Image (cartoon, rainbow, N blue to C red; front, side):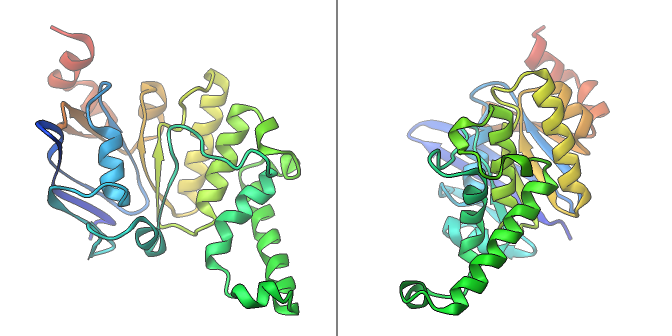
Length: 251
């Protein structure tokens, strides 16, 4: 059984078909990339899968259960997390505090225990802090734990965002253009971190424009053009696909 199965998914904005009858699967433990020119519908597809947009037609199944129509927080609880093309951080908080935010939804102490500052909240807050530090260490940025997020380099902010997404203990991680705005050295580091995340048994679905990154780390690639799937296969198959070559290079 595929971890994620997208079946005949469509989204229209007025007369524009942003996503049109798209189907594909993501096998557990793999890295799958979604590529295509600007305006191909890649981010819209991510928004449909993660629940921030409602589809007009089609189905999304995750871990064998239909999730289309669920709210984003319900999909997150089911084991899916995502990042965004534009990094969304709490700039006045430290890197550690940003990751701790990702852990708090799984806390159990409750509102009144926090208000009354009961001992149970102290224990839980200590556990959350330790887990957040472990995630920063996993992504090799623990030295920036107490630095304000706004002061971090762009690549370091991206790593903090990865850590915060991992805090929800996802089975599937959606990465929307993780290399956007990064230089060649930062992009190589992000590629290494993504493969490290995969090595922990987490499946990755990413949208990305950097073809060297996509070809280096992906097990499979699906190609969109004008909202439609035009190709799917291994990196080598996609590199040799005539339709894909025509889209990127012209006749």
